[in-house]
Length: 289
Length: 319
Image (tube, rainbow over the protein chains, first blue to last red):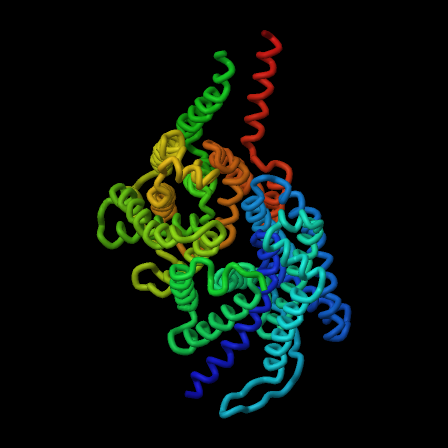
């Protein structure tokens, strides 16, 4: 019973971390309709930036994370203006963006490897100490992570429902042509959405790096997980991505506890297959919310 | 008129001649021959992927996984049953086509565009854990070793010609497919699905066909590759072969016939040269993929088209 409880708890924690990463992906897909195949390495990049600001520039923890968030916004803007915007103008953009972002991801990954070296890095935890609930030990740090992700989702929901920019993004997501007719500059909205997605992804990378170590090649693994979560929950749907992340996180923890670590992918594959066969559009597919 | 169509055929014939005659004159230079053999495998893999990705517009990213399945199934068949590898290779290719059509082709009939991408990526990522868990037969994480060679005491020259035969056979069939009504149906489904359906093209049948065909050729190349090197490991499923194959397909020109082969020529020989730079090899490759997509979206076939245009204009002005 205790093993089950511990598995559930660690599943919820990892699930919400991967949920945070999937949110960045789902914002980009939801608005621009392009899949960001450089996603994993963007998360790693955010984590490395925060780590570098923290350990080499000696900012304090909150300052480092905030500054890395800001830098990631700039990175997003740079990638969008240099690569994505050019490709979106071509007629075959759905797959030219896929291939270009795969190339970009590999480029960044090996660049990071050369700059920072292959040694593993990790961020310090936010809060020390832990709490015991019914025989299960939970760190305050983990509780804070789950709460941070929840509040991030809350903020995003308010952003998409209440603000003008958020509404414009939803309009573009639903129908780019319709948005153009009512006078929304779709390219501008694309760039904001891309920047936002990249920055949130970088932030999620920072959170992940406090929980597990980071090396550049881990990004690929994270990204595939992010893809599955996003497709599982319904592309472009933030709540769907969060629920899917929780479900898959708990499934992963249960598989690790009772079956073995190497089988995680196979279980994910089968559950993904089942969901897609019943609901090809994902759990909450077809809505941006 | 003769020199308008002539130059392409000339180039193809010349390069085939060079490939055929190379071992006759330079049979001591086995390193270059090794790279040529790798080129045969890669060219078939990239062309089969191009059939699926470029022609049929099915964004499957599992093709390197298919290649590895081919290598493993032929290797295991030859190693444990003792059947001659020359029989195992085509059998393994058929088996690969069956496996892939069953596990990726059938489920993806229900999926669209980007979902196929994710789904096939997952399939490819689930393979290493299957391999490491079936250590008894597949050798686990260390890979399958001691795959029997094609026949005993075979020298590299024979591998060269067998590889060349597989290369020619696969490309000839792919060329035939692309120019047949089946290939036209693939293109029609890619470019305008509704219109193609209204003309009576059976979408499911064509999709299964393209999955079976492309995985057959990838499996064929993989099986030969396994027997040639003598070992395969889950490391072949890593990021570097995947990127190399994607870059080949893209560099040559997506959805153009000899495109992937041209890409394979450039990248197989180019990446051997890039080995000199050591660590930065993948960095340069990654940057190259982005730059090609930005500045040459139709790949190297764009240059071929340009030469065609210049010739056409020249002929027009003469008249």
